[in-house]
Length: 89
Figure 1: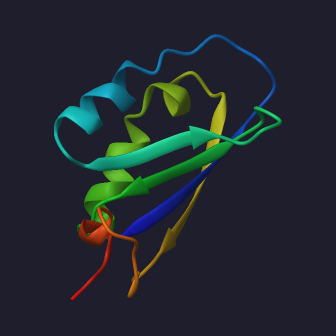
Figure 2 (figure 1 turned 90 degrees about the vertical axis):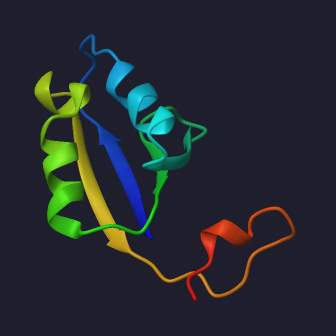
């Protein structure tokens, strides 16, 4: 699993349609902004890191040059009831 920490750059308009498409495909599992709205977190299913980098390179925020993504590779071992799909086996 990957955790992506987006850092939003100086305000410009960008669409988040690509994010919605990745949720529909089951690639993105959860997402939300930081309280200050200057970034956030995206949880991504386990996948090949090269494929994830390709997805991010095509992201609408990256294409509009309004976001920079820090990707962290994670192995969650514990999760609350209902979130078991986030754990690795």
